[in-house]
Image 1 (cartoon, rainbow, N blue to C red):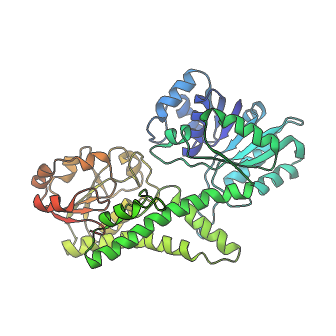
Image 2: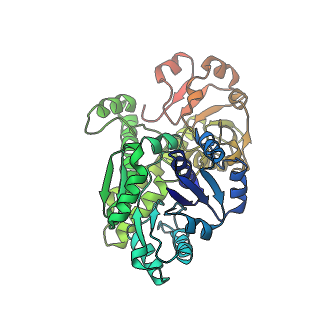
Image 3: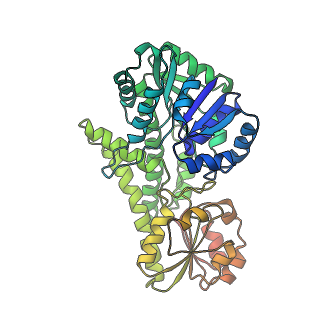
Length: 431
């Protein structure tokens, strides 16, 4: 099939490259000329394992191309994916201006009597499908020449390519049988479980999924706070609780909270949507509040143990909001760093892939290219991202390099008993 994927951000580029890998002809479109120029040179604008290879393979095969020409891309494609950003506005509402702009661009480029399927891949508020339909109709596009579909993405940063190729489910929200058939055929080779819903249900499924996962994290973080006060170990609690098949162990990892490109904005957008329709989302409010508390509590723990932070060197290991990505959007690490700097601490940081991104944001950090270099002379180490290499550090060497052997483990990657035996003052979350 001939596809156009509009937007070459995280979702758009992964989607376009993977569809090309399935044998489709894909044009990835973006108005950012610099980004398109870079992609045509083989430069991937963000870190995602496996993506560089799949982009290179399919551009070499001629199945994947990049363009700034929206009109031409729309005219030659039968399925159009809208995959642009929907960031939060100051009041938490999703900013859908980019989606609306793309819909208007599609309307202007549509040929009469040529049926096209327009797919909302962006995470959008319930009702966006109706808005896109209205835009096309008001621009004179004939009702029987297009259909709008909601096809939410469930890609995890760090494993997006495998998530696309081996999905838990594919949600297709539509009211037109031709559109159902087109999108079903597009995904058929994945042999995945397909769920057919209304457009509005599909739009809400994405928000509900992220809200539930965020709920599990905030829940276990609240349990961790209780554990610290009563002398329990949250890891032991979570392991036992997670064995209940009704609950599951995934996302029951206590720590410094969730961040990234999805959970923060999607929770806020769902809260706003609920209030917009006259409902007070009490659980969502609590999820958000608990997550904000985690950073404050963790910094309080550091301050309590180190006393006056002014002039003290603290090393932060990990900057990305999770491993296997360079994404710093709403990363808890940056919130912790900002608070520590405000209290006079000198921060040295190390991250395997996110340094380049971080340098654009944090100007007051000292960055190191090697982990032991970052640790050398530190009065405390803060583990903010659970990169695999941090689990395998030579802890005896770490202890010798540090001015004081104090570790604040924001991701609970170390065993408290072993750390104590090695002579560290160790502080985890809920332990």
